[in-house]
Amino acid sequence: MVEGMKKFGIVFILACLSAAVFHSCSKDETIGPNDSADSVIPIEQTGVEQYLTLPSDYLFDQSKLPTFELSIPEDSFDFLNNDPTAEEYVEGSLTFEGETVSPVGVRYKGSIGAFAGCLSGEDLFEPSGQKTCTKLSMKIKINWSNSSDKFYDLKKLQFHSMNNDPSQMRERLGYWMFREMGVPAPRCVHARLIINGEYVGLFA
Image 1 (tube, rainbow, N blue to C red):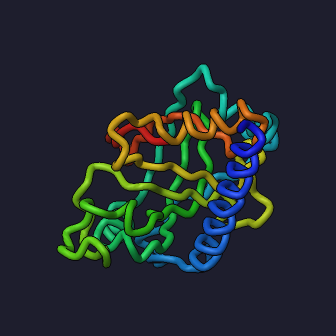
Image 2: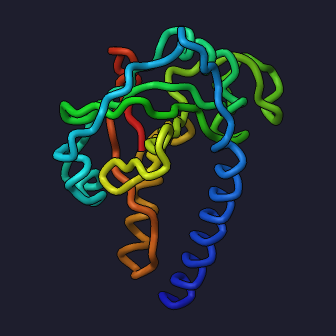
């Protein structure tokens, strides 16, 4: 029974990862507004930043609830909110534990399920229109301006909105269960997200 569950878990994880890779690759080269009015101030690294010296495990400490802050120019944020399904990047900055990475690429992410009930369009099977939910899943591209840039050894961060999960626990518990059975699974923790000074909500 356990052996069968392990095999199922491996197939499931590989299928999900494959789908995520092919989906995200098609979006990474797309950019949103990029004129001077929508730019952010670049911050040069000194080389001693915590995010350059600590491993990615620091972000996935199961005993903590980290807070991430995004700063996005108003025009660029409006651009994202007017058509989340376009999944186009705009420039922003990311602050975590007092350290800021700037610029980074920011966009909404998802598919039919992620956008269902959260856009102004009426067709649930072809999501369209403006953002109507408080939060949507987001992707942060750390290596936006330099392909070698990393943040705790990561080039991208994904914040899942969990809008269809009343418990807000399914994703984290599911991956934990796979790991407990010895099946490799993505790391997952909860995190608070603040955008332009406003608390948006809890994400995975």
